[in-house]
Length: 291
Image 1 (cartoon, rainbow, N blue to C red):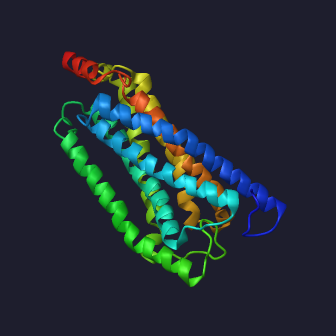
Image 2: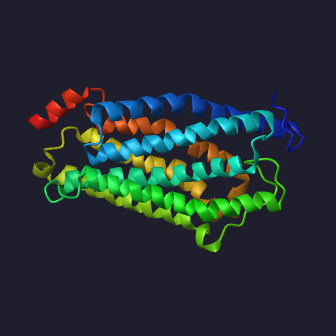
Image 3: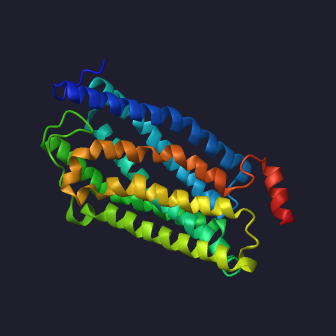
């Protein structure tokens, strides 16, 4: 079953078996977790708050990634790719979109929490569901517009080198100069925003007790920021820096496996972000009205 046809050798068979198991485990865990999280977010929290808007779109991004991972499981389990170059191109683009969109949505969540804790009154006109909807629409437009030249280059690369497989290539893809460092610059910039947001919120919760008294669960707030930083440093940053460090390229597939795990941890972010995550919509509305 696990006889890989790309290259002969026991070591390669073991590696590809491990990749298939990792992607398969992420698929089996991430699909129900994100599907249930999305259902709860829409049913119990609707789209009435900016945090809910960002988290719904984050769940959608993760679901798109999980769906494509099943194709990676098939490839690494059988060593064949019968779906053609176009499907390979779109599967690869959806993975890259997940890294970009997830990192942006997570940063939006951090900034939203920052404004709610540090500037609760002055940020009310900014922290609206309509503004959040406009922001996520711009994010999706951005990631798909980038896909146009990026996807075209990737498809031409497959044709030029006559690559009949997918995900594992004998040649190195040379992206356009304008796109080469897009992802690492984006992830590093967003990581900086998250670090600054974490520091400001931490200082507010420690020193300005009167201003932070309205925060019902300070531990959950800090857990949100800690998880966001973990997402960036462990899952997003290493795979994004592949274009910067050639010595990392042999570990490309391992870093992709690691990055795919982020979709299984995002549901924890939803849980800690809402004290009433499991409440019905009526209970949430009643609690909000009382506050």
